[in-house]
Every structure is written in C-alpha cells, then in structure tokens.
Amino acid sequence: MGCTAADVVTALRAAAAVVQEHRDELVRLDQAIGDADHGENMKRGFTALLSRLDAEPPDTPGKVLKLVATTLISTVGGAAGPLYGTAFLRASAAVGDAAELDCDLVARALQGALEGVVARGKAVVGDKTMVDALTPAVTAAASAQGSVAAALSAAADAADEGASSTVPMVARKGRASYLGERSAGHLDPGARSTALLLRAFADAAAKA
Image 1 (cartoon, rainbow, N blue to C red):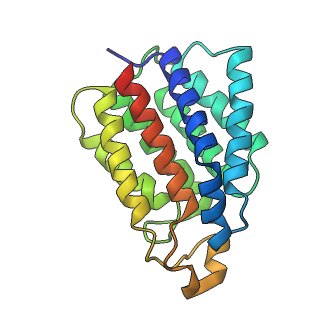
Image 2 (image 1 turned 60 degrees about the vertical axis):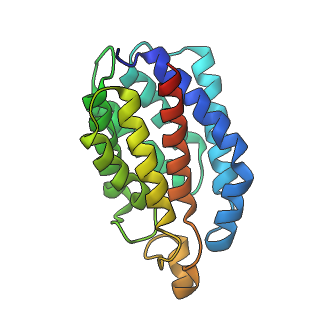
C-alpha cells in the first residue's frame, strides 16, 4: 500500500513531536560547536508547520512536502532553515503530483533532498554536516525492497550510523569549522536532527 498525503501529514506530526522531545539535546549539541540555536529553531519551525497543517492539509504528498519547505524556510533561523527547506522542496519536486508514494518514490524524494542540501550548502561526506547522515540514508533507501516502511527504516538506520560517524570528524563547513580541531569529539547537530526526522518518519510508516 502506498503512502498518501494523510500518511505524510501523520509522519510530520510524529516528527514534530520528536523535535520537541529532543529540543534540549539539539541545543546542547549546537552549544558545543555552533551557536546553540538549532534545537529551538527546529522546534519553532515544526510548531509553525503543525499550525499550517491544521489549517489546510494539502491533498497530495508532494504538496505536503512543499508546505514543509515553505514553512521551514520562513520560520527556522540559522543555516537549518534554508537547508531543510531546500531539502523538502527538492523532495516535493521529485515526487511530483503522485497521489501516493511507493518505495521508489520515497527513495527519489530522499535523493532530491540530498541534492538540494548539497547544492545549497556545498558540503560533501566528511565535512561533519547533515550530509553525513543523509547520504547513507539515500543509498540505503535506494537499495531497499518492498514497502515505504522498509525504505524509511533502512534510511533511518543508515542515518543513525552516518550521524554517529561525525563525532571524530573535524568540521569543514559552517560555524563549527571555525573551531578547527576542537570540533572533533562532538556529534554534529544537523546530522543528529536529520537522523531524528528519518527515524520519526520510519516509525510512522511502520504503524501505518
């Protein structure tokens, strides 16, 4: 069975709850190597998203993803707003007007998201950014067989590993790069939030 617009909205509500739950963790992570606003910025963006979804939920998965993009771009400060906004915008374009998402379309959406983040932030794997979580997630989703839940579960597992891999890295992009060698030993907050979102999406898909 495919993933409808209503299913995507349900997954986003779950993601908003996860962002709320992990707000303080993301603040602490960003405090160590950034400007300590990632958790609050993400919470603000997803709180605004819930209001917009309540007001008028879109009728296709692509339109839902586009609403996420415009909301996050307009409400999330720092680097995360443009990066996540571009990710969801490219994901929306990748799925087009499809009434439902299947495993292949989910993989294409994630690929589009990654391409958007790379285009916007110019980061590559190893730079200690969200790209380190999203890149393996894309590969895992593309290799998954069967259901949307299977694709997202594989992506979430890979994103968790990718995020963890940022701990020993020296940052080469963003505010963390100003710390040089001192950025090593810390989990990248953007990679962590990417992994959290994908896990929330995977858990929601498994319950659908």
